[in-house]
Image (cartoon, rainbow, N blue to C red):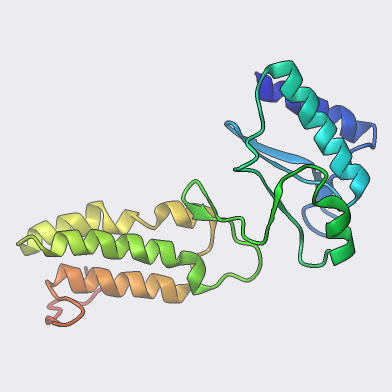
Length: 199
């Protein structure tokens, strides 16, 4: 309910042309904010007056609701084509730390720029940790097959709902899955008795 009031305050400023949202693509709709639970992302043009408007709206909201903005968790991100002088004009007004990396959100990296294998390193690490725990146990082929179907085959689903995973990452995960299914390790390869398509 509190965030609904914040949304209304932002909408008033956008309609009054005080808050200038940014287009999500060329000739696309303009966006001023995204809310999810108690997290938010605010968008505006890189101008000192825009930073003052955002600060004013947040300060008013905090006074009215009794809530506070977490300064440690809040970051300000500038697009790559922002000039150094524009960044200097804006960065200190809201009091947030400037970042070039939006890190992860809900377990997924916030990708800004070209997608690379490094963006999905967390997925391979998760796979490797899970496999390392299982490989210490003596599992039958049926047991390994159950783990492949119930766990490994679904681990990438969350990532695939928000991003197109690179083919080489998918191939790497498939390779690890095949090796585990047939009881092999990085050092000791085992014969794969059935083709992967049939599996």
